[in-house]
Image (cartoon, rainbow, N blue to C red; front, side, top):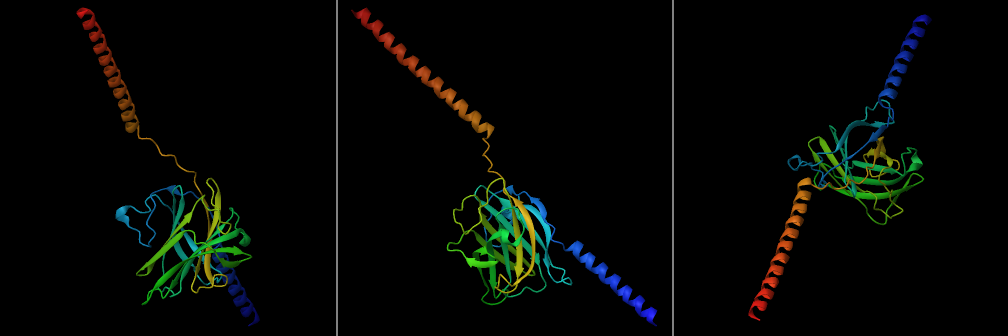
Length: 270
């Protein structure tokens, strides 16, 4: 009887170890080493991706999992789209849930570098819902700076965010300034540098203790792209210069001929 109990205990221990190892492998905070956003036309930040206008057409797209500290929680599979232009970084986060909490929020914590330690995250952009899916539904875009894991409201609001729930699927859109913030309460995103972004999900407006699921990605801010001159516009401009110079030369020659003829006429009359 004792041997049977020992065997059962060993089997349960092995099953537990396999389950734990599988959870750690599948739900480890693996960082996407480098998302390089392509340049694209600025989308309208309204939570509605208009495919007819080819919004987010050039976005870099990744699938990641927002991870819970609870080993029995599978987390939330999300799509993250990233795109930029010369002035802003655009991030869209999309996912489906059978039941969305009425005070759901998605936040983006921004590190001052590619470091991923808690103290490295200094800026937070959060979209907070109230009465999601119910009468009186509304949301608020919030801008915080972080100090010792505490959230403090920025004196000035920078960036923009919006979201929209359609059935079970929700789309969040964020616009974050690039290389143009002099505010010490915001992360300064510089061209050619890589930064850690922590995506957080919660169900109550308690951003220090209410984060249910999270994960980290690295995003490299691409250098400004110089506008390429259209070769035909360049050729057109050169031809115009040549033609106008030629016409100017002909006009000058015409005036010169008239002056010469007038001088000859005067001599004949004299």
